[in-house]
Image (cartoon, rainbow, N blue to C red; front, side):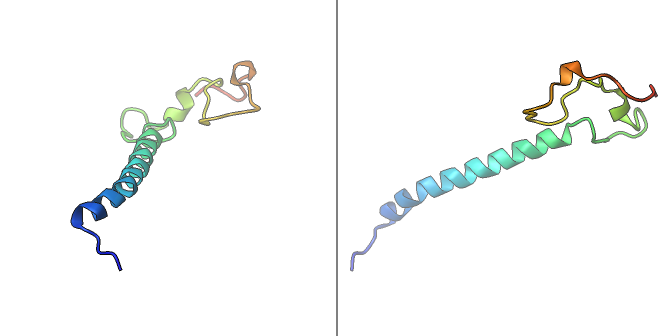
Length: 79
């Protein structure tokens, strides 16, 4: 049976730590992106309904494959 030295064990774990940190960083950036979205209200005194100020051609989804937002017409009243 082969005995591992301390440097060999840490060398083997480097890719695992790299991908764990990469996944945690990506998840954190996605949560920050969601927190800055138009549907989140952090300050209710200045603008309690910020989604009413958005243009009807605003792209809500991160990736919209079949929807062309530039050709949409606004439906509903202005608030």
